[in-house]
Amino acid sequence: MTKKKYVLTTIALACLGALGVAHADNGDDKLRIGLIATYTGPYADYGRQFDAGIALYLKEHGGKIAGKEVEVIRKDTGGPAPDVAKRVAQELIVRDKVSFITGLDFSPNAYAVAAVSTQAKIPTIVMNAASSGITNSSPYIARLSFTVQQVTAPMAQWLLEQGVKNVYTVVADYASGVDAEKAFAKEFAKGGGNVVHSVRTPMSNMDFSAYVQHIKDMKPEAAFFFFPSGVMPPTFLKAWKERGMEQAGIKLFATGEATDDSFLEATGDVALGLVTSHHYSYAHPSPKNKKFVQDFAEQFGTKLRPNYFSVTAYDGMTAIAEALKKTNGDVNGDKVMEALKGMQFESPRGPIQIDPATRDIIQTVYIRKVEKVDGKLVNVEFDKFDKVKDPAKEDK
Image (cartoon, rainbow, N blue to C red; front, top):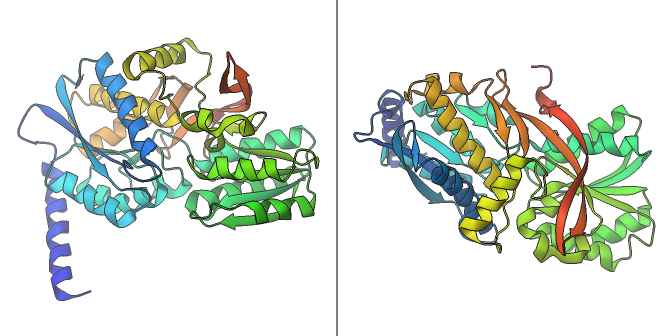
């Protein structure tokens, strides 16, 4: 490290250290919340969904939390960019004087922000990033979304219940993809299943023909895949269809990122019949979700369908508000984190809880199938696993 960089880093850390005590007082009656997300590039929909969920919550509550007007300060990372995420987190705390950091759609970004959150003692609410170790990386992080293991292990269990014994796995080569691969293999092996082959594909890869052909040549009973929501799943599904995999007798399964409600209509009929495991569906039949979907349509129209990003953003704001009720409006990081532990409430996805031991989410994981309902492609839930913890933290 050069002398100049060392000095700048030291100054930044000193500012953050001071803010660990002083950031609660921003000098006015606003509650400032920093939102770090993707607003540009191929994953720009992530930020839009976060914004929508937050806007819905604030509209319901007159734009206020704990009696204060809420100001959301947005920072764009343009995708998985840990250096950018860390820099904008520092800006949010030092310059913008936020009391909370939220958003964090990609796991590398969440890991990068962890050290900043710890140094500043600022509560950080993860609204998507799904790598298991994120909550271990800072005592000031709580997750309201999910972990990849949490939605993957139930799929392995469910396949075993259906009598499937050998599976080929394909995942994107990044933290969450590796988590999915390992969680599936571990849970599948417990029940006597065998992963015949595992492949990790680069995040930049958009040609899956060779991968799909190899699956066809291996002739497993089924294949399981995990890719982040957006551009990769539809491309893989098209390659699967073109290679005639269904006719070859090989079944396909995935986590819910593959049939993200926000992208499902654009993905089209190649998704029909795909069975996935996840924690939220636009078609979830609870009264709470029906109202959420209706309110979403009234505010944003029907072109943008709410997905698990918007639901978690809505829940994240709920968690902040409930925590501040317990602290009587005090945004002190230690007090807020204590208030978050064990918190329970009804989400549009169903009942959720923040694990008091791990600060991670406990929730229902649903098994769903893509069907056409009233002419629309939707994830229809037909089975479920209740009160699922992150398998990596089950013993804590």
